[in-house]
Structures are given as C-alpha cells and as structure tokens.
Length: 234
Image 1 (tube, helix red, strand yellow):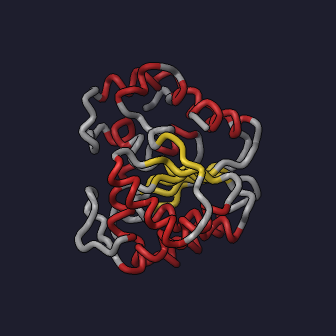
Image 2 (cartoon, rainbow, N blue to C red):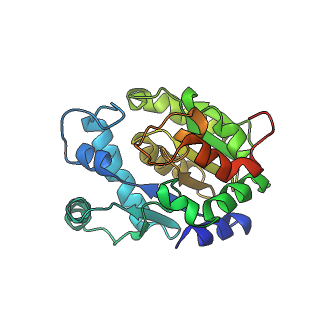
Image 3 (tube, rainbow, N blue to C red):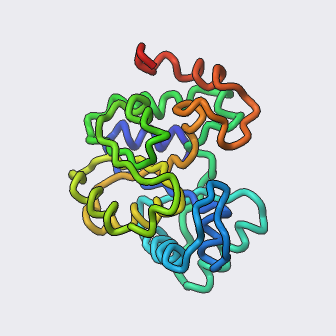
C-alpha cells in the first residue's frame, strides 16, 4: 500500500488503519528510561499498551504499519514480533502520510488531504492545542484535545472522550504521540468499523509554523504546497 491506495480507500469508504512505531515506541516497549524527542516519557504502562496494540494490528486485516527506517530499529521491532509469536504485520513505507522533503515530488499528499476534507464520513482529530488548525486542514470541528506530553497517565479519561464521539465508519486522525497507537487499538475494540490514520508530527510545520522535525524546507514551501485547499482565513 502507498499514499495513493490509502487515499483511494478513503474515497471509496473502505476501512484503512495506519500506524507508526518509531524509535520512541520501541524504547517504550523495551522498557527504557527517559523520554522521546517530544519529551513524552516512557513508562511501563505505555510499553505494555504498545505491545498489546501491536498484537491487535498484526491480526487485523486492514491495519498497516510504517516500517521504521534503519536496519537496527527494524530488527528490534522484528524481535518483538518473533518473541510474541504473532503474524507478520503488513509493513508499508513509514512516510506514507508524512510531509518530508519528498512531499514536493508529487501531489499524493495534497490529494490525500483533499480526499479527507471532502469525505462525507465523520472525521475526528486527536491532538494537542498546538495543532488546533488541523481542524481547518481536514475540514472538521471534531477535535479532542490531549496534553502535548504524558497524557497517557490519564489514558482512560481520553479514551472515554473518544468513545463518546465515535460513529460507524468515521475517520480518526491522531497526532498525539506514542499513546496514539494504544488509543486506536482500544477504539477499534469499541467500534471495529472505524478507520484510523496516525499522522504524527507530519502537519506540525503547517499548523504551527514551527519546524519540529528539522525539515530542510521552509514554512512557505509547505504552505504553498497545500494553499489551494486551505481556507482563505488561514
């Protein structure tokens, strides 16, 4: 699966689930101390939740996991999969929904955003207040706010908020750190018809005008890429 197929699934109202297990998620799974690049702390509870979610996605027919770049990182994830003796997940490009430097090579992510905007399905965003403009990017008023870090300590509180907003076949977009993977897994148990896409930090630069991931392009570059589908009051 690539960005084009993911977009087509949304356009055709077909279920799609996409997750990213990066180096932070792996450190949490392996029980490391400290925190990830966003100062989101690793905890035992988070690590176990990530393991449980990985099991669910490995068995799910419509779940795809971004393959973490770097052979060592992927080997660590593969070791977890082998230890758990679960089916091999369906791995795809880690940057399938990511505004990296290659985004400007084509219009694939532009069409992805436009398709989500135009979808008749309910769209729910889970993120922190810094990304409030994601509502305008994806054309929805359904925004569930979580703290920018360590919200997993109150996981059940936010889980219940999300449950109350779910409808059949809705689209859940998460930009809420490592806990997103656990949240999506639990919400799939509540309503197995939902689609969920872990967009992570992909739209931080566009929404915040802040380069949170050492991008080599400018804010104007990413704004100009999307400007035709952004509201006039952007």
